[in-house]
Image 1 (spheres, rainbow over the protein chains, first blue to last red):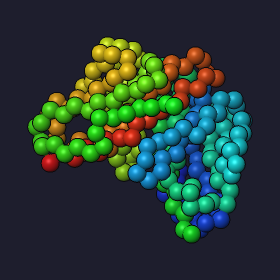
Image 2: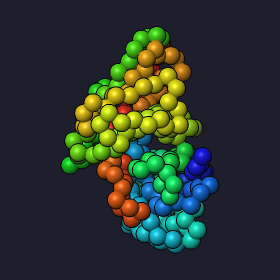
Image 3: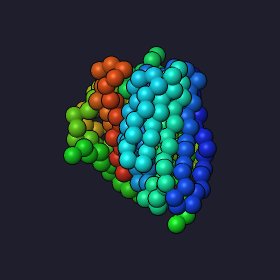
Amino acid sequence: GQQVMQIPQYQHVQEGEDFTTYCNSSTTLSNIQWYKQRPGGHPVFLIQLVKSGEVKKQKRLTFQFGEAKKNSSLHITATQTTDVGTYFCAGRDYGGSQGNLIFGKGTKLSVKP
Amino acid sequence: DVKVTQSSRYLVKRTGEKVFLECVQDMDHENMFWYRQDPGLGLRLIYFSYDVKMKEKGDIPEGYSVSREKKERFSLILESASTNQTSMYLCASSSPSGGVSSTDTQYFGPGTRLTVL
């Protein structure tokens, strides 16, 4: 079945350093979504990418969707302690069940002040 | 404001007990999901439902069943709880996708941390 691989599993950075997490799918995706889960919280939707090669920005966060629509990345510039949490990508397969997203295992980000 | 609520934040049960986890959403969403989240394993889909009285197995349905008698409510049932079902359980809901460009964002509840002794 469809798999979404996400790396790295953990990332420890010094405040002010950049951070990137990568997501790769075994199949072509119709869209990809990113979620953030703060410690002790639940996943919260950040953004959706739909078009091949799409790039979207939210302040210090930059999201990219690959040309082949099989990979995506989230880049945070100059991390802050408020960025701490686990970031998940979630893809929807063209052939997948309606509304069903396949989640990556997440990248847990810790930021040292 | 979008809201998904779960019946308990913390639950402790004994092996062999029947356990009910309730989820309610107030967004009139057709789709509802149950996940479990374990360290290093991410979110794993247990069951989902597209409509009232409809259910589909996810990746790890064994040992679980679900019930959706009303649109806003989706229940997860552990028929006979076992220690390997100790986990964080997350419910989510979404509206049906109208096409590849529509946003089928999933809205999550706060989670229920279940411990089976």
